[in-house]
Length: 150
Image (cartoon, rainbow, N blue to C red):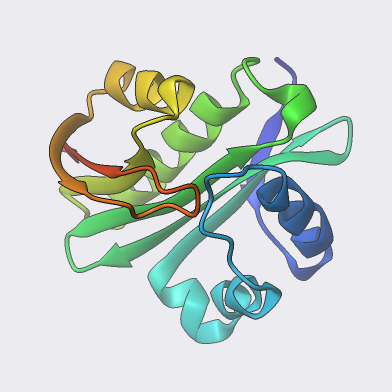
């Protein structure tokens, strides 16, 4: 895997939106939400990263830092890059940034139907702690997952 991780910038938004639109279960953010994450206020409370492979955006991760917790909002990988370690690179980078910011816990929601993502999170130490019925656009439940960062 030759992908590198870096902070997202405005020039990445078209690629990020294209990646997000390709995933049917994602509760899609509008462009203005991603732009807000890049604003001065957004950068104080969030982690917004992209994975780059051969100078193209291969995936992205967005998370909010809330007191001593990081809430992972979205990790998505370009379909052509799936199952090549990009998601793990992004997840690890978000968790490292959260630890550096003093976070002691990570939380996220994942579709019960998204077995690859659930496997990634479980292999990284996340455990299911709850469920949100019918949360995703396709009607699937969200599993609430949690991981201590200490």
